[in-house]
Length: 476
Image (cartoon, rainbow, N blue to C red; front, side, top):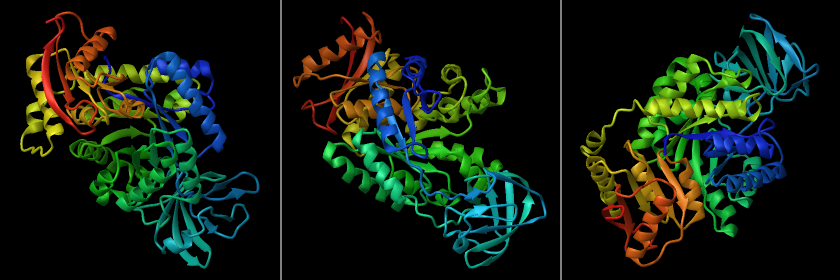
């Protein structure tokens, strides 16, 4: 496996044809993101079916992530579609306004007047326009323009420093969760969570909606509110992973604060055995250009070196002119960055205490395979937990997870340095190990004479039962 870091790509108008999607998957997409901020339920159902069909044709195990819209904290619409705001002018945000003009505009988020006070700074259109609140009169927020610019329909609103009370899950999100469970999305990304409570509610809703299908997705918390930062650990523990969603987060905390926060979030996610995706404008220039900027190359490389499980494409793959080339460029950057990664396996284990047998076996497999110079690590796993624990540490060999559960295989498509394969193996241990070795040779991961470490549980097939490690040699 030449690339450890996974690639998440959003599909949209530029990438929804079978031909383009197939080229993207072959170029290296591991997870397909469906953005529920756009499109109808049937659109997402159809795209999910297309992803499954295309992945099967490519012989790939690809996960699907349903990204919920979250609360719409946006301005309303304008009579002429847009206005030009000038620094120093007065401008009103009015929850009762139907169509806006140069003096006022409506609000999709009707509770905004209750969330702001005089002196607060509101940032519109990803922070390109800045307003300061002068007064609040009922449903009206009277402001002065600090930084002007063009403001068009439905642009987003952020409050500098955070403090908006909008719930993370809306009625639309609840409907969208039911849609996502209908096609058994492997992950659900929750927008704007502020605390563990938001993620616990999402967990309950997805479990209920997925019960009819016997399906429970992984949950990804999108860290994009200032309020989420003090509660990062509790959000991580209530989730399966996080997304470093740098767009809205940067508007709320300031651009300069984001790089250090990114490093902190990635480090903490790995320490708590959670997944982490780095996102937002990673290859933004490739929406219209065939090559990335040097700054974008550095951005992706640093996310890899920080330890991200995955790096994500949004508009670049959904609406850009070069979706396939963007995936190819991102994959190339990941491979190059990984070749310079520092291995610190011994340091990772200092001060660590493992209370679970299965987790201890996973760590022993990493340590043993690393020091013996094995060619691969294999894990016979039901749930994928063993592979997840292994993926939290850097080693220069592939981790190959073999599971009889299709849902587990797809979930593992997001795990760093893990190649997951669907395989139904014997309930007899020695035969299961023989089948695993044969499969590893068939895919080219091992050749005659290669050594490898393999973990499994006895009895075979018991979730959470990994209790055995063997070091073997092909043909030996």
